[in-house]
Image 1 (cartoon, rainbow, N blue to C red):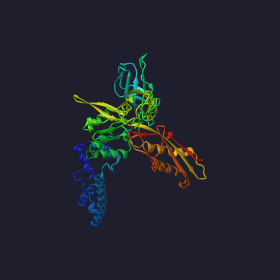
Image 2 (cartoon, rainbow, N blue to C red):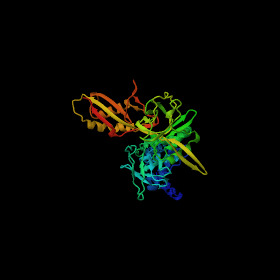
Image 3 (tube, rainbow, N blue to C red):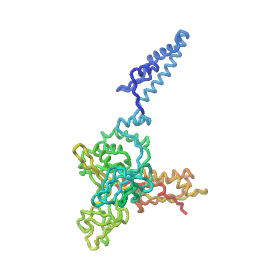
Image 4 (cartoon, rainbow, N blue to C red):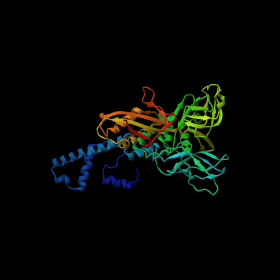
Length: 489
């Protein structure tokens, strides 16, 4: 909403030409105008525009007309009072909502472009200026800072942001093309070891309204609410990826995905009063087999790539698994290391996978001081969904038509779940049935079942449950093309 500054002379002309147009807002709010004042204004305006109006008509008729008009004016005046006094983030129009956002320091989200963390491999000392471009064949990404390849030739965890909007899933190891030109003879490669962060559309009024209300409450909510509110102001941050955990006797863990890591660090520095209490992600080893090679199972999804060097520490019985090894990835939660543990003691349960791609850190400079701010980037769990159904409807409904009706809605549901939130087969059933009811009578739906794969692994609810738990430090992603539907029989 534009703000126009008017001079005193201009305000005087407006007030003279349109009496009662301008309203003074006091601490007590806007008050209704006294009926006698409305009558005086009405008679004065009528007399000015039609001199002699009060003498040309009988007094009773003049009074009847005036009383009728004053009643209408009183209703209009009261409507103005109710409108102004009722404006709040709960019921404000989009224009007023933007004004509240300015007051609370909450900017409307313009939508998030896709982003990722990539690793460059090349000659030591090679300078990569901010704006260096790479691509996955769909999006072109730019680095946001200046970088130099270190002595070991590997530059990890470089944040890159797409130049264009989009919601396409960004698989791991898909960003492999160098776009920016290099001098002849320079061999530089790039890849993204973990999935990128898909973009989002512009922020809806309802979501913006909720953020403004949260900003107004953040002082009362305390540190976690304040941290979340500040993180939501960082461009390209994915709202559903934010989670602030208060850890008993260990401080805080802050999860957030998307957004420039330096801006994220600045938001955390602004909102978290106790930086040393920030804790990294810890991924305990759930089990280690007595075999050759030893197979490691992690409690959280590991996010490793095949052939990556991993470090394990803390194991007190099967101590031969402590150290650094080349990992062979089996699935999202299992990998093997080239260690023969056939005759080793049983695994004690104390090992920790120290190689954890969730752990990130950035530095904030405040005057002469420089602070390291640690935070957790939650990983993504890819959901593939197979739906089997049957109808006793005599009419023919093509599966492709049903899929087109159901897949986008299920995809929207899955992509709206926050970090650590589970999948509900009951909710998915409700969404599917609602879509099917647009195509055929509900009484004709004979059967409906779901098969869910998380990162390629079949996942089912426990007995007597409709909930499929995912990784507590990850969030689900999918797209309509990952949802298939097939009729039984």
